[in-house]
Amino acid sequence: MKGKNITTLIAILAGIGVCAWVFWPESDKPREQNSTVLAKTSGQEPLDSFSPEKNLVKDQESKQAIDRGENLPALDKKYTMKKKEEHSDDEFATITAIQNAADSAISMPAIRAEVAPRAEKMILNALKKYNNPFLHAVYADLLFNTAREKEAVKQYALAYPQLGRIPEFRVNYSKAIMKVGAVNFSNGDFIGAIANYETVLKLNPQTLGIDSSLYKSYTSQIFLDLELMNLESTERYIKNCLNIEKDKFLINFYAGAYYAKEAINQPKKAIIYFEKCKEIAPMHANTRQMLYNLYLAQGDTVLAKRQLVK
Image (cartoon, one colour):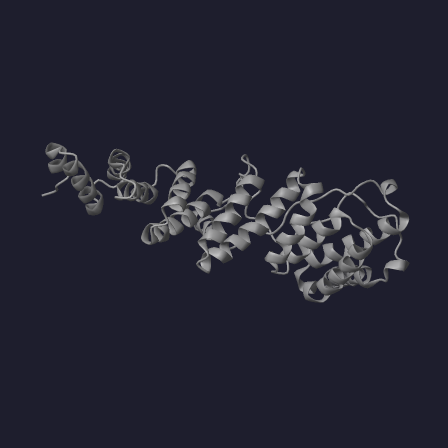
């Protein structure tokens, strides 16, 4: 019992020490801090490592949730700051203090609501004085972890020209855009979602769920464009979608429907895509009907009759 009391006391003292550090006035803090880390992760376990050799998705249900834009991984990477001698003493001390406050807000959910506003105020004041891309980056991380993804994306964009070559930065930037894309998709803004996901594909092609998210966005917008006869955008989205998923039924059916339209009038291309659909779903009635009509229009009654199912 005595040992448990000692352990509990140590844990309480450690917690008090962290809070004291966060709320200790910056001018009183020692300046000699670790300058290698500017932004850390939230305390949550990431669902993926963005590495081909490491897949931390435990089951299919988790993967499907990510594909739907839900339960996106928390930020889990670090940035490195320039060496201390490359900053003025005041700038280095300011960034170090901001680093400590932001890290606490990100990594300690229990005190996030209390600490995050103070960290944000510190960052905004510093940005008035220093045009430092790392300030934008750490601000973006803070915003992301407080569910302000759209604002986070703007800050990542400001830091991108200087930090865009850092793989860890691109990963975090991609995660924020993925979240915004998921929101746009759920709101029916498929064009906005496509723009978000295409950006992610350029930033970090290994982002988990990017192909399926793009596929859903493309096919949703293609359906609308086909109905509204927006043929130019339909063709562009079909080609982009086929580049990432050429073996799925829906995109092949939409491609066949597009080329079969009277305004496009490319029946041979339409037949190719509908035949692909038939390979995927041999008994799909609409596919066979489309093939029947196309073959019959070309005078090939033999192939047309083969599409009929008794």
